Image (cartoon, rainbow, N blue to C red; front, top):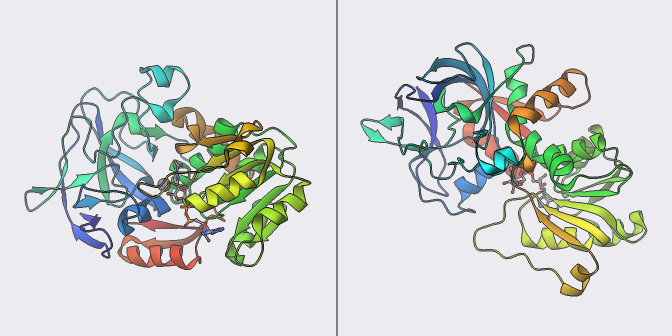
Length: 360
Ligand code: PAD
Ligand code: ZN
């Protein structure tokens, strides 16, 4: 079975043959159908985030079909269509009860093993690290990481819900709770930022100001509902936002991962406004804002996974897609076989793709 294995940060990823043990208690084996290339994968590949667990099977955005269930599994069955969630949703811990499933206390992603410490992937008898491992033909995960979905939606599209859509739309609706009529700035309109734009549309925001350095991204942002556009490679972003909003936006979302652009987002908001950091910060970097500006009721907010409650949010998002009110087809700008792995990330860096979906 093929899988994309990161062996060393900064070195191109190879598609290699691996072995996979079957599911044990509470675990499920899933055959992947679609898997999206997210910048969070690239942070690991490039070394932007600390990463000790190699060799590692990459991938966290994905969808597929249940092939086998381990003992005790009750929420999915063989043949079910599923989307992978970045977080467990155990339904029993304090945060799950509190509606904060993204902070489920049984979250293990990042440890690169199953919750039991087991590592089901191996190669020539050597165990490999993995989290959801959606860049593999098949994977084994706890059932708490899977959301069963309706079967009339193509899985190559549905996979985008698992990270980019949940994070972006969720950042607006679940985390920041943007009110109708608000002015919203989105700095960084890639695979996740495009979904912040979509979230702002769903929130009935007023002006939706898209900021990017690539014209293609601004064009795409228009196609999903942004109303104003700033080319950060040519224009003074803060000044333009001040002009467009008469003194500052209500919300500004940073969706790249640089401290300078978080600061730029903060500088775009008015007194009482909220700056939301969606991008994953590079390792060891602090976020600094001027204290006197913060004093005037401004808020700086982080968001992991758009305050996602996967079992609640994925189904309504798919319903909106089916009704034409949430766009997925437009976001999946390229479909590639998993063998074209490195090319997809070249596209990401060149700014020529919103999301590439891998197929197997
Ligand atoms: P992407 O590479 O598709 O999009 C980034 C966008 O930013 C691109 O369109 C770039 O052109 C644009 N950009 C770069 N520099 C600038 C600049 N100076 N000014 C304006 N625009 C610029 O990445 P993505 O959308 O897949 O991910 C974006 C970030 O979100 C990244 O840091 C990723 O790790 C993070 C993320 N966070 C969560 C979470 O839970 N908060 C989840 C998933 C992804
Ligand atoms: Zn992601």
